[in-house]
Amino acid sequence: MTERELTRRRLLELGLALPPLAALSHAADLFAEEARGAVVLRATPAIADDDEPTPAQTEGPYFTPNSPRRRSIVPAGASGTRLTVTGRVLRTNGNPVARALVDFWQCDARGVYDNNGYRFRGHQFTDAAGRYALTTVVPGLYPGRTRHIHVKVQAPNRNVLTTQLYFPGVARNRTDGIYDADLLLRNWRKVGNRRAARFDFVLAAPN
Image 1 (tube, helix red, strand yellow):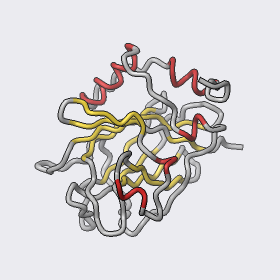
Image 2: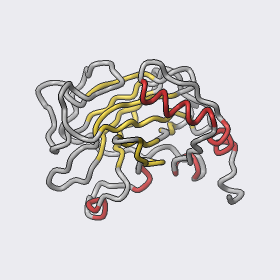
Image 3: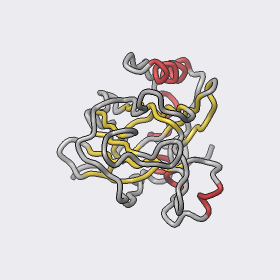
């Protein structure tokens, strides 16, 4: 590990114990693994690279406001490979952001958005340690785009960060004009017949 990587933020990332979230059993298992030291998660590029905020990206045409509050955005009977994404919302100064709004939306496993309702749409708030946990499915592909999840992140009474998350190993990453490698999901892995990943959002510290 280089001196640059061994920052105060990196030490927090390696040493922070994360207790389970009772509201989401699969996410609770992942948090418990971290707490036991069984999983060491790398910082996102935004944390490891000079504490830069997470890059913003276009909202796209399919955002719907007033989504339901829920950690799982998978509707009953939906097809697709289940995916759990966990992480934190942090300031560039290293402080976690409690009660940050994290709003997710995406297409389904076939590449179709629900623009009349709230399938695969939902928001949640981070806990006191800045943590969130999302249950969804791996989104499908549609013309012109690679796999992605849309996100809006807002610290209380602050500006909204609008961005997108991307998937490692997807061929279309190379041809998608919006794709940004700094927004790749981290620690991508199989957990039984599911997938799991990690991403920490970094917001500019307030003045």
